[in-house]
Image (cartoon, rainbow, N blue to C red; front, top):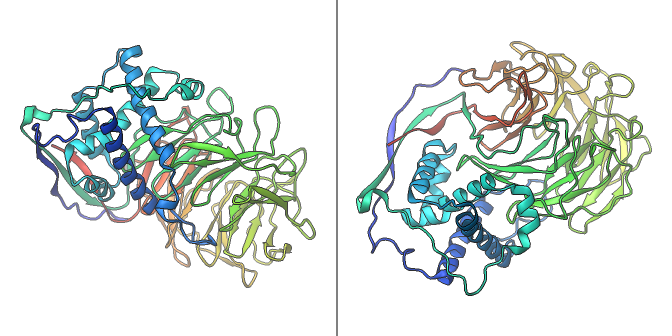
Length: 536
């Protein structure tokens, strides 16, 4: 894909006089500040909810924002942020200055991976710089400094109940004074390009890992679990927001699933559901539901499923189906989880495919298709599970792909594409309705590998990375040929990373590199993008 010509132009995001009359935050008391922050954060969360993905197969309509959010929890989160800032000053001698806020605002504007949506956030506050700083910038600065000055996971977990605002507390907060009441002008130089990689901010990112999971919510990527460089399983994760190019930590509470790798994660529209895996001692048969809007966990019911790892999970629109994996043997059993009732039921094992792990599964809209994997050897078989009738049928063997595991599968909306695995640079396309396999082009196909990532953009499949430490990839249009992904500013080669499609870009993060496990990532924009590449 050739890079299109660069088109430079400028837009003015902010241009205001910072004087006493313009700053409507300056003379607020603590209650007034809390009320104003609550109003701000409701606007922010409503915008995020408007962009939150409601999977197309979901059986119920997307709830109204007013029915989705608990104002009490949102208010508590605001109070915790304020108390964190107070504790930073009193116990860590760290006071947030106007220079810190200005620097962070500059960084956000310069590094945003989605300028269009950033402008939407700014518009929530009528482009008033004081409100933008107080509502958007200050919370990010506080959270980052809190993590840097404390053992974030332990302090947040153990002292969360102490972070309550006393009714008599008066908060001292700093109102930034940019350029001594002179006009502040944030002028962004934008560039229009395609087929490019942009580096993600790694400051405050979760620790390096592989064998983790990642989901895309519509506004944030959530990564969780995995194994770190010391081969310890992890119970933590992070949320990455490409608009602000920033990270925040997932909470660790009594409801957080135990540390693990080899688990699965799906996005329901409101929750990320984690299940199964290996906790470092044994396989597990439990999980949890994570709500990113309030940074909280709840349990995922009690299942009677055999504990397992390296299984698969798909979201049907109302239920999660987990199947297969390894748990003292190769499993061909599974379970169906309903998050509304928080209950489990078993899948039928009659005529199910033989047990396996390291295979793939997709949801077609009505059926789950599993294929490939390992059972004392690589497999070239699979099965189609009909959820409504609770029955299995085999996938065709004629013209099926060669046996493999550690491959990838994507659903195009009408067909499943199997690609690579076991150092094969070939694949097949499967039609669920006709149970027929057909060939796909290998012309200009990427280097053969395994443990790579693959996403479906809506019009093409993008694969990238893989063992051993590949930093290349390819774009495949159904019934067309391959085109290489861009090589400019490409991230370090890796395998066992995660990749998610973020609407207009592919986000890859973590994995194992030549230098060891990493907590870095990058965003690949295959098509035309307008992005910020300068700040004045």
